[in-house]
Image 1 (cartoon, rainbow, N blue to C red):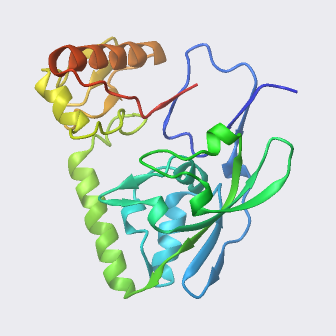
Image 2 (cartoon, helix red, strand yellow):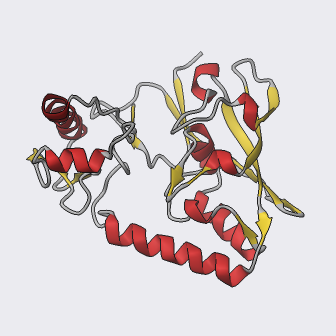
Length: 242
């Protein structure tokens, strides 16, 4: 009967400067050994995507290369159908074990999760992701590793990983790219308090200089207003506000 919030790695969150009145439960604390059967991996929600992708590579299993470098947990990736470089979780996800509000443990297949771009029905249903099973394909280990390294190099080249951020700030609006709209609105490098629009990739709001959560929120709202006024496109925040 205490307010609580479940998180994974916390990499896609912006927490209020006032903190959170309640309990934050990180699933990284609850993990069990992973199970590899033929071409599938069953893994705890609290494992990181780095652990999952490296495990897949070690076992010559292909399909998760796109997720290498996404700094989240398996549960978080399922929760928001994480994706990058033309791949997304729903393409390789087979089943998910969840706990409902009453404490019942359910096994759900992919079709029951209503997976779409950066969305699942997990939040609406009040589920906690416990475990996920991925169906992959056998492939050459060195080829898998090479692809993972290529995608990581692209990530390092294109994203402002030298500054703290909650990742890509906005969802991709249909027919557009958020970063290009922000750049075209003249906001590249724009600063508000300690927060800034990244010079390297305009889709990222970075903590440039000891930004408060409020600085980042105000900058996000400013960006949304400017883009809407100039192009009539409503940007939707991808970052979770706590």
